[in-house]
Image 1 (cartoon, helix red, strand yellow):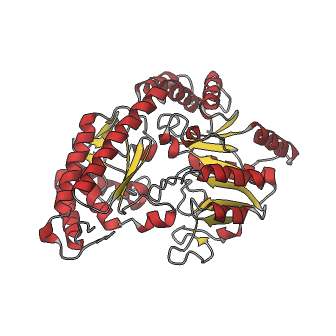
Image 2 (cartoon, rainbow, N blue to C red; image 1 turned 120 degrees about the vertical axis):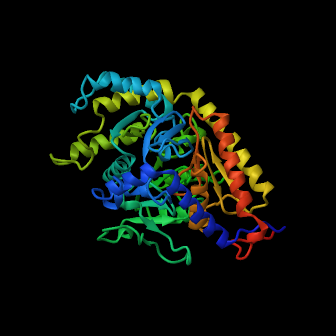
Image 3 (tube, rainbow, N blue to C red; image 1 turned 90 degrees about the vertical axis):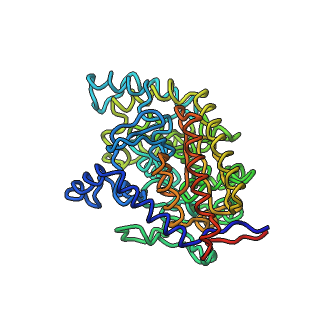
Length: 469
């Protein structure tokens, strides 16, 4: 069948019009941008804050639950939620109360608190791994688990999947050539300041290709396979039926550690994607949302891995291990982690957000079908993405090929100007316990109007896609 097309000039015209409308509606943001340009590189505290496709950054006044208000007084339904950091809503009341209570009791002492006992037990009960350590960010946690894996296996190499995301740990920025899948992997060209070839100690294969994994691991030179249970940052890629179980088996057979990074895939359920499996990884990382959106990450390990870690630490000379930071597990972090795990990120909360995301995903699918576009929607619990391809991608190469930066920017800005924000990096949407049916209806109404304008037959001069099946 034939599908609707979208003209390139339609996309460009929409982007220009929406950028002009944004500037007209946000004079205060524009004024603040002029000020911050004088003191911040790229005009913002973190350059990612300028990645939204807006002509100037959108400055926030306050955020609560599933909504935030900008400095110009406009309210937005937030389906980005800090790119997962606020997955349980902005300022959950229980977390906010714990933060207020702890604020006058001390911030950091490099000593444990009673909250540490509560949080540790809660992590074990939730994820099934008996031992845990704290980090400040998931990037830190991923860096630490890779170091531990190398230390206890005495192997130097790690295996990752093309299109993976594990924060800014250098080791994982190794890519396959999308134009030549048989070419050797290379260090990512966009990685700034990289001075050595990462492929010396990191190899990469396509997600869902178990035979490629087995072919690598048979050498027994890999300390670990580090992976998200589903790829989430190159466009959503779900694991094929049986793939993760086969990955577990391949790692076990070659004495390779299997590490799950659940920082994004925690959206899959109460125990992340791990809770959907009938096996456990050797190590697990979670961050961003784990303490209600405050800087915190955790990494857990099996009893056997923990014993090997103790042995490695005891055998090492005295001195800095290169693992840990002074603020890891600070007093405030532990108080908020304990409260978030016990009172906010509960099983009923996950039931609610998954049900709400299902409503949104079903609505997006219905509109995509109604306007006859060759797109699809992939859902992972409380997270989903609409992708510019007929079927959900099966690996990173397919996911990357489905992206269209100009179209994404136009759609994102169109939605933003109508009070709906999604993640800036790709078409990811996330819901929280405070996301209402009204928020979802607002999203779907704006999305439908956007599709009407994009598929206007009078503008079909240069099509973006024509797919026939």
